[in-house]
Amino acid sequence: MEQWRKKGPLGKLHNIVVYIQRSPQRIASFKLMSNNLCLLRDNSTRWNSWYSMLQRALRVQHAIELFCIKFEENENDLLSQGDWQDLRNMACILKNFADATLATEGYASSIDLG
Image 1 (tube, rainbow, N blue to C red):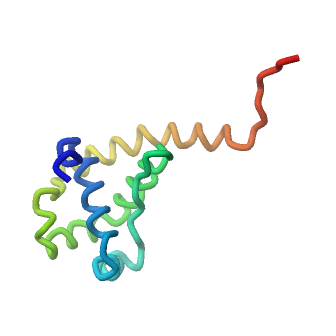
Image 2: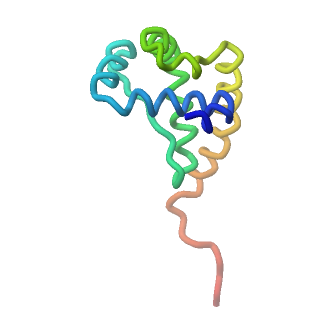
Image 3: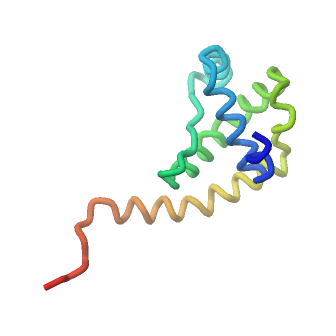
């Protein structure tokens, strides 16, 4: 967790998501705070998963803040208002890549080997 925390707001968010997802009780508690929405987790093989994780986290920011207050084990990963702004900025940047990926999905190879 410390390694992720060193990565800044994105690492802190990763730690929070992992912490919540490691326990059915914490998942249930979070869902009560977030109108039944779950957090999405980043994945090392799908880089757009970072964008998906950010989108969902920003949507349920208040629930994440409440959860971190309730579960003090996350005190080192508390996200400040500046951290949240950084996450919003990162989401804007990653949206361009996610949109570009979606725009190219389903197209056949454009390389002509003939």
